[in-house]
Length: 385
Image (cartoon, helix red, strand yellow):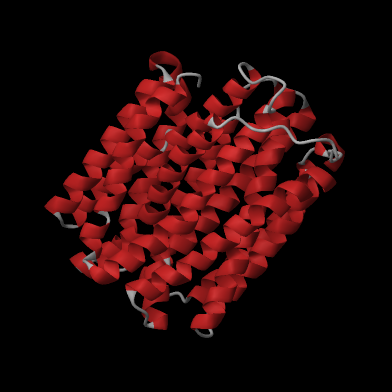
């Protein structure tokens, strides 16, 4: 691999880690946000909805800007925006400010996510080797480290604002240092065509739907695991972060081994097995109860869910380049699946919060187990992965 690609690969890897680290530190402090603002589960769920809305609203303009200006400058500016958004969230002035800051936070996080994935595609294509699963594995490494550090910050009674100021400074320095390492913006600039748009096959909506199930489960597991441990089982601030930490650990294991397992046993079997493991593991943990059982449940949930979205993306890209060649480009297919899947992060966490206000949070999370079982039916559609 030539020097410029090695440098770009390093820069993309660092950006993936930053994106995951930011998400991890944020999730770890959710119980503290709830305590400081003194809000109910339903209100917390509504608040988290603003992060998801920010993510969803950002997807289209982020993709368009990355194509128009190149992904490199979008990565740089979105990383700076992410630093600012961390400060806004850390202020915690009042509930309405919290909603506004969470929207900005979600928008910046998603813009960085889209642009770094776009640059990763270019690096992967120029290197002529599979790298995407490793990049996403590094994102999970970032979430794990962020979750641990955020939990320690909470245990040590470091305020969200102190944490935010520290992270913002690190992100600004990192953005400046790695900017020259990326490939130039010209490598993935695209002219927008004004020609007629082809009708995309319905199968890609199906891929997106199953990705949505996985995203709903991922989002709810991340946002509500700590609250469940602290409120239902009286865990300490640090112990309440452990479900998310083991969830991230399982995601790392699954993502670094997913390509090998899918190659050996087939994507269909791996997705079906993942749905069975995640659904059964979560349900058993919720029924048994207690922090140890919940940690095992979150580990099995993460292990099962880790393979779903990457393999759905792979199936969409493969199908687009074979059966539907000339109808839809692989990048368009993956973008469509991604767009539908991301909506799961919009509706999952707040849905759990609203239901939890009517019934106990512990039993509300059985909905996630049900969604995991539905992923078993996705397996027959992933045979092309």
